[in-house]
Structures are given as structure tokens and as C-alpha cells.
Image 1 (cartoon, rainbow, N blue to C red):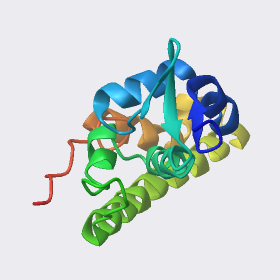
Image 2: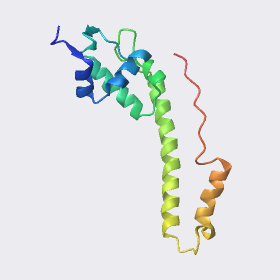
Image 3: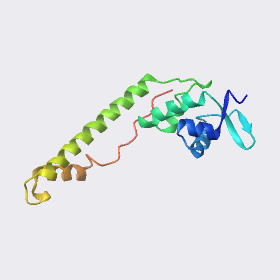
Image 4: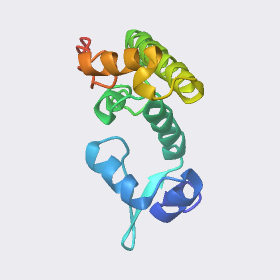
Length: 146
């Protein structure tokens, strides 16, 4: 049994995911323990791959609820390609906004105008922020049907 199962401390050490997060993921249904050894939860060795998939999803900006839907009832991945494409489009929009902001800030930092408020580029950034075009929280995209 010990060779096929890892206790929560081993999973935390091998995955880099804190034990508290593992317990939270278990509460959310993202991972499942297979039993206990004393007071410690035991996990099947496959939990490490599942945690790696969760980490990829989190890095891409998916919510835990979205990630949970990416697993079939048996635990294997069931990834909706439309959801991936929609997230890629969202990331493209974010990249464009951040690139424009970076370029504007670099210009403002090097601008020879006596003050930033006299710099036309910086003033455009301020107007865009005031209009909500940048810096405002975006509304969540509608959820795709399962």
C-alpha cells in the first residue's frame, strides 16, 4: 500500500502544493484522498499529474470551478477545446492591453515634456483609464454550455 500511495506531506513536498491547498482542493472536489495513515490523508500517485494539470489551468487564468469541469467523473482530463480557445482569446486581449500600457509607460518615463501631464501620450493613457478602456475589471465571459 505504501508504495502506491503518498501521504499528504509527500504530495506537498513532491508537487510544491502546500498541504492546506491540498485540503482545500479536496473540499472543492479537485483531488480525492484514498484513505488515511494515522491522521494523514493518503493520495494515489496519480494525484501529482492531476495537480500539474490544475497548476497549468491556474497559470492560464482558469477558475477552480472551470478547472473542476475539465476532469471527467473518473478523474481523467476532459478538456473542452472551445473553453481553451476562449481563454486564449481572453489572454490575447489582455496581452494587447498590457503591451499598450507598457509602451505608454516607457514613453512617459523617457518623454522630454516638463511634466507627465504635458505629455500627449501620457494624457491619452489617463483619458483611456478614466473612460474604463484600461484598468477596469472586465466582466466575466459568458459560460459555455457543458
